[in-house]
Image (cartoon, rainbow, N blue to C red; front, top):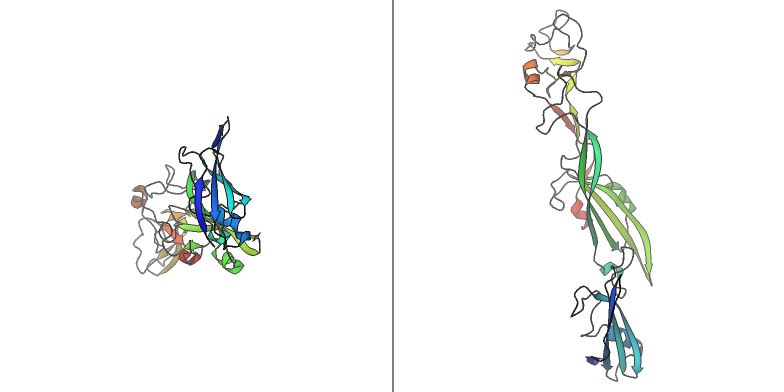
Length: 303
């Protein structure tokens, strides 16, 4: 069975244009040999070489694209195929881009956008702590508007693993993902819905990823009313240790030189030592960072 010829009828061209859209029609005659399955002819006629494909642009107007193709029986071995063009928007994400192709072979859908939110901050763009003139932190802290990039991907899949989805939800990339280094991308959504097309059962799976330029670690300003005193008290000029145990290692309350407790938590370094007033005045501060989200290989998602 085979298509022997495809000829366009140049006398049957149509076109129309209105305020909202424009349309055009082309007509083709498809001829078959006698050794073929008649039930396949409408589909073979639409897919024959020379018949424009769905979404193919018009040869004269590149803003017209193929919306529909309709084969019509003319005779035992002849079919007429009408090709309809339009300027109307393409169909949405819930529909197949080609109804004669398996959903599993449909192209993926991508969307890049931004998510905006406000975040309390304790440091400026140079990493220095934001303090008042008395070198105290603001309470409540100042807020900053943040814009994260968001990537949404939708595709059809043959199966859906709800355990894997639960593990990846709120996880971070342990590998590079779409150009972003490890730890910068968080999986915000991994959901699906069942789709039945003819006798095919598949899943429409939706992924959403949020990219944060500062990463997703918990970052806290290192400070406290207690500090770690090593074998010798290198911070004797800064704080006063009540009692006689100045030379003994351990944690001590941070007091002023007159023996009164400090009113606010005092900046510390990452070893628990007191940060000197000179360092505080110079904008030197230390921040504790902790991982609070699990990390997984995003390459395993096949995206």
